[in-house]
Image (cartoon, rainbow, N blue to C red; front, side, top):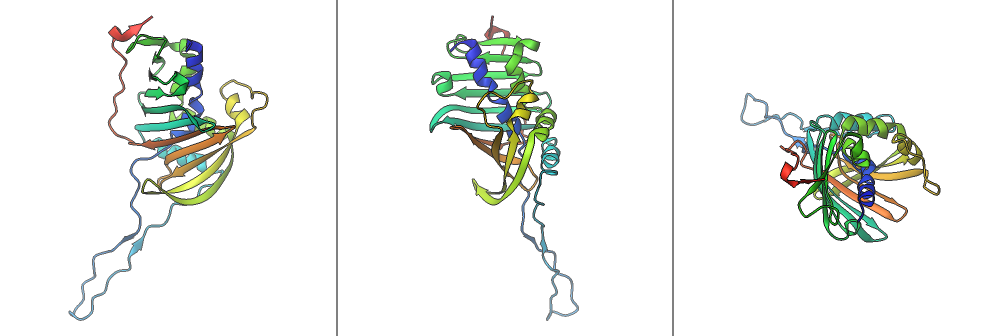
Length: 264
């Protein structure tokens, strides 16, 4: 795989990560919470306060959807992302990595047909990126990019910035449809289907809509009661992605590879 091809493959991830990085910490418990029985003057009758029922999370709409996700995500310091991209039923790429908000950093491993069946790794901290690609770098070695040289890889890193993610997401948001409650991996979540203007999303990256590309994209997002996204998927022209977000606010320390592993 040539360098520009590898970078192009990685660069296809930013919009997906940007929309995906909106998950939550642990979901809040719901249901009844009995109070302590009130005292009575006799042992015959015991009065108990009515149980308190937690109100369900308010349904979001086009006006409240992005603000709610912003409020939820900005409380998160780190998150774990696991994803799979398939094309016409075949796995193109799998992803497994962590992102942090401060510092703005990413550490991710990618594997699959897009990398000739091998594993690639990217580490990015602020405006510096390190990439290790089979066939491009010796095993265990990284190429270092800084500033403008990060190019599309820089876009990938910026996708982990909550402010940039949702500022761009909000302006390209089309419709918001509440689908209903669904249980995912034993967790009760609320599903929303949203449409995004492809042209507006690309324009925010300084790019034009390619000929023949659909004008809108539809994403399905599963949110917990705190309006944090736990799962996201989309299907577009034979390409599908399924991504889960977990381990919010767990201690994560992303460090650059040592100098001994950097090649020019």
